[in-house]
Image (cartoon, rainbow over all chains, first blue to last red; front, side):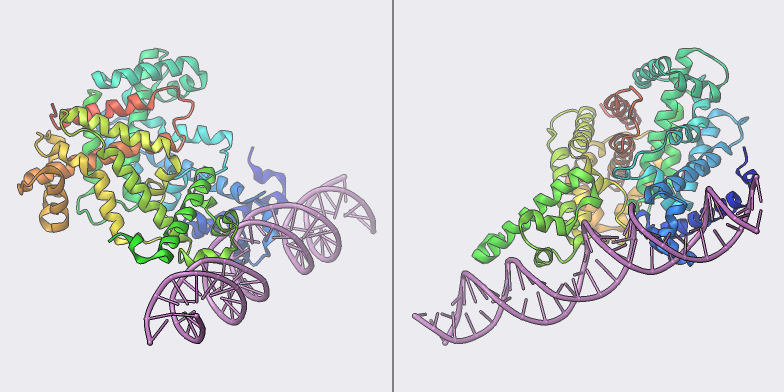
Length: 235
Length: 235
DNA sequence: AGCAATAGTTATGCTCCATAACTAAGGTGA
DNA sequence: TCACCTTAGTTATGGAGCATAACTATTGCT
């Protein structure tokens, strides 16, 4: 299971891959996605360009690795909120954690929440990682009482869970073992609305669109989630 | 005022600039921002590369032009909603128009609502265009009754308007001649929240993140704005 | 000890941005 | 009307970056 078992060669290989990713991250932090250049990574490692292709089949493959790590990191941040707090409080903590991570790592955030890379096809496990990052939100809404405006969405997401076993599995993994389709629909609707309501403010903030407006984006986000909690009748 | 007055040469120049933008738009539509290449535009026009630099000082300058046009276009779409409808209805129409435009022109949408171009400094009038696109939303909220969770933001935006004359001018231009700082704060808070609540769902949808989830993003957006309208007590 | 896998190399070709230095029009004013 | 100067275009050049091909040298393993 652990790749270090495979001998010293594979060991060194993993180490080099890590070094490459590290340098790529530095380039990402400096100039955004466009600044991640295999040839410059190579130069920075004292190797010559084509050597990189031993470790990553191409640039997208390297970016893929960075994306995976970013999802895991973001997921760890949101999963860090204690589960024994009241739902509303948990929601605030999780959304604040999400925002905090995005502000700390703006370029990595944009890597996963920004423009789709043209031509890039995410590997299958990316979906799982994304769902893991959103999972903790689902738990908050399973036993909520959504108000009128949410019901249409909740109906649609309930149908989605019934249709797709992987989805109901996902929901069950984060909300407990209940099979109730209505509960699943609520959890999914709450999760998706949380996602959308975080994405709006946080993405605008990280992209610099709130610059100079002199209001506190954290307060805005808090207000948005107070409202969302109200909509789901969260205590 | 009109640039066509300056003689046949300037006339031709403008025409060519338009042609260049047109081809650039086609490339944008095909492969996103990264696919807009001056050299290929030139080839497509039957000219040779460096000729482009007569018309745009560099690639960013061309992108700037596309961005300006996109803001104007989006602004026209949201401004198209009749002003004599009830506020809530207007809000739904405007948000739907925003989404529709984003879906019709996904790459142009991402050009203005997507990742910030690294190193790109927007020219001054871009701010005006962005504000114009958001202006019609402000009008909806000027005489609203925001609920508790909105008040902190409204207070901060009121202060913003008092501090920055260009902002209060902007607000007055879209809400009527009132100078009431509280009304300005409400209008701005409503506008910004509308922006954020559109940006979340629409950006996720256009970026393909809702793919395969089997719910209707339009319904999601509608629900979000029903909730927002409720928060501001809109009739 | 020797062989096969692996980490690296140089050489090459493509696309693209951008500048420099030159040429050919063509509109305009004396 | 014609000479001139502006402007649209050209070729030549260079640099960054992705990627492949073909080769070399190391090194772990049997």
